[in-house]
Amino acid sequence: MALQSSGQISLLNVATEFGGSAPHSLSEYYAAASGVPSSGAISLSDFYGKSSAVSITYYVVGAGGGGGGAGNVSGAGSSGASTSISGSGISTITAAGGGGGGGGYRVTDTSGDKSQRAGGIGITVGGVERGAGGDGGFNLFGGDDTEYGGAGGGGAGGDGQDSISPSNNGGTQAGYETGTFSSVATGTVITVTIGSGGTGGLGYVPTGNGYAGNSGFVRLTINGTNYDFTSSGTHTVS
Image (cartoon, rainbow, N blue to C red; front, side, top):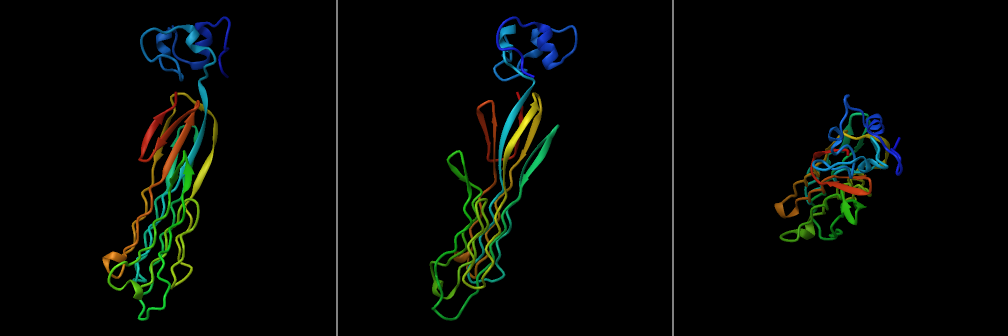
């Protein structure tokens, strides 16, 4: 429960909210909550409206799968890795990585659809697309009209596009989780694990290799401030 926002406030009020060991002193509560000084001058008024627990909104995006290779039906892209957040007293949230796209056949005629197959779209968080799947490989040089492009890898916003032949081999959609932890104790360390994007599959020739999927992403919104993670790390709640 948050401390009062005005009027009389005592050291006992602060200790009741934030704990600690008697005899208490204000210096015991440096950086106890957002907006409380971490050193130097500190006063009881710094604790108006502060709470030992905060709400956290999370956005967790799985990594995109890799695109399949062109002209190599065995050249599937690899799946993207899962992205997660965890910490003491909170549920672990995991967003699965997207599936890799399958490889496309090499054919002997020139009648095939030679358009490149797109990876699954990502999810837009903070105005940026996150967790997109890799595009399928597509030869632009030396035999592109005799090799079907590989399928796209799965992204956080949708499946990858199937190859022309074989069909039904687009990468499956990556995971996306968002929600709110309503009461997280200050001092809680949240561990963020960012999944790596899947690698592209091998094409019949290197120019037909599939493209890698995008890495996962996490945003934590705490007291109106966004904390973005494009690589694994930790955040201590304050």
